[in-house]
Image 1 (cartoon, rainbow, N blue to C red):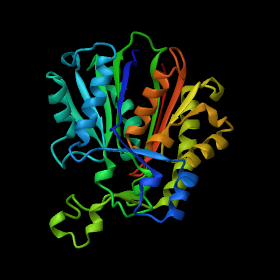
Image 2: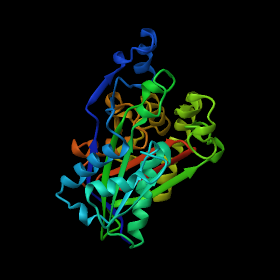
Image 3: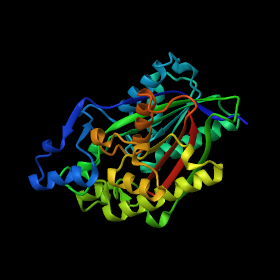
Length: 326
């Protein structure tokens, strides 16, 4: 058995920093609630000239450059995103071209905020099967361009960013991605969505411009995330026969600090074992887990040999978790 082993990580956050106080379109008393209810105080926003693939390219280059790995050696590129450059082609194709990964196949994964955990599982499966010796997984989101900036229920909580992981085939089953759990409940497909732009509601037939923007049912999402986030972690550890006390760090989707604290409480685990950076970046959707994983490794929060659980939840409804030995 061989696993997908983390060879390198990288991330990219746009230069523009937007604080809660910068959100002048909302009343002052409402702005004060943002930090209290979510733990978000700052977020990064892409420039007018930056699109999702631009952020993805920067994260991919940072990941490869860290170990001086040539893009020409990359065999496959998976791009997790729910804010693609265009409806088609796959945003991953532009990333492949720009970084110069000429022999790599490339395709997108859209599991909304669960994209990174789904992508980790797919990368591991491709490597386990023997089809690839390496996979570059990138997650990139530019939600600032698909949201209504006057919608207080969503706009203040999200940010733009990208993360990347280079996986390589390992010759042992004791390191790398050890196990994954993926779940979907399509009955909740309207809970988180961008209604217009596809074949269900083409832009040409759109009668309400708000249909072109991201929307979510906040309370339903909160409850879903707490319930399924804790449940999938317990299922993952049970399937892998690993004790929760052996996990060095939980890298959770950075949606809301209160969600993470509630998950920690259900698991009877100290919240200090959950890596959090959402105060600085907000919810970067699919990118959040890979950005957080890169920071956790880069700052030595986790080190070689540590067991890490990545977990996320998002539109679909979808949720997933991965057990990884760094």
